[in-house]
Length: 520
Image (cartoon, rainbow, N blue to C red):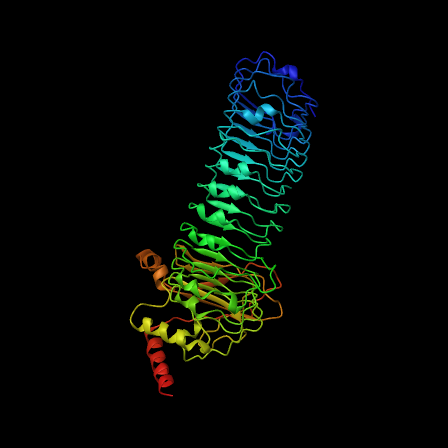
């Protein structure tokens, strides 16, 4: 290995960019104690010394008036930061992975130009030396500083801070001055396992869009002041001690996503407020593994008119309310690993994906080959089937793009044509022509009980790809070919597969069957 002396940087009056982290290992700079001398670096604007062996950058105050970017990532021997008073134009300071860093100079906490300060994974850093008064700071990253126990106070000048990332640090509380961060848009407290509460001043965060408290296992409640954060769009609160949503959350008109899976603290299951849900923007709810029974799912879910995805994986209900079918925009419903679930809900016309895998108690009967729409539901769900076929007869078609469901079962409907050979593993579905390949859909299967056979049923509407295949150059002499391909673990096998086209005659046959059923 070659060793370069710091004297090599003297007489470099025109140097503007210094990078020593991207060269080959045999030519990597090795500086054991200090960085390059700064007396001749007046023109430098960008220094990158990642993976260096530097222990400290400089002693005292050094003037590098034009320096804007300093990257010392993974300099594991760096122990302390110098006085930054002589670096007035510094904008980005990146110290990610500096495991040995224990000391930050107070001058940094009053710097007026720094917009990004990244101290991620500085595992030896325990605190910052004083109050933060960095008027230009937009992003402060302390995630992974596992020894960091006391967050400093925030000054009134910190109104430009938009992202505060504190994932995995050891704090028990947040300072009340958090409310001074009126420009904060993202607050990440994920896996702060010692955190016991959020400050009441959180209601002053009028710009907050994303709040992540997932993995805060000692956090047992959300503050009532949450209702004042009108801009909040995403609430991530899985794996906490929270067992009830405060009624104040229903004042958040812009809330689009609620994720609370893994909240199983209460023996009676996760509790919802009795007040009516009024969240007009809500698109996604994840209540997986919340120990929910059928009684604990509120009937007023039907008022969530914008809801697109509902994840109820791993809960304890035997059935779910029929109000689920009243959700006009619900596309995705996840019920996998609901061991007590016996009956699937009535499925709304908007549904495109239903996952009921690993539901050991789910009762499925054999498919009736005379019923082409049994591709979408078991015969126990005749009310759903009847509604769907009526819309089919009216020319509305079944789902406009696709519909798929994964349920326990082993009987392949006899109305499907047997393939020439077996296939196994994960499923891809593609449409081919003589000179192009049209990708239709892919489905990643969730973990399944290896001892429980499953049926995966997929419907594709011509509406999904009509415009492309109707072009003259898309037709081949051999017509259209559908291919199933599988890429997954060897423990999963598809033992049989089949396909069929839904034609006009199917509608006539189905109409006849339904008439006979209604007369009986």
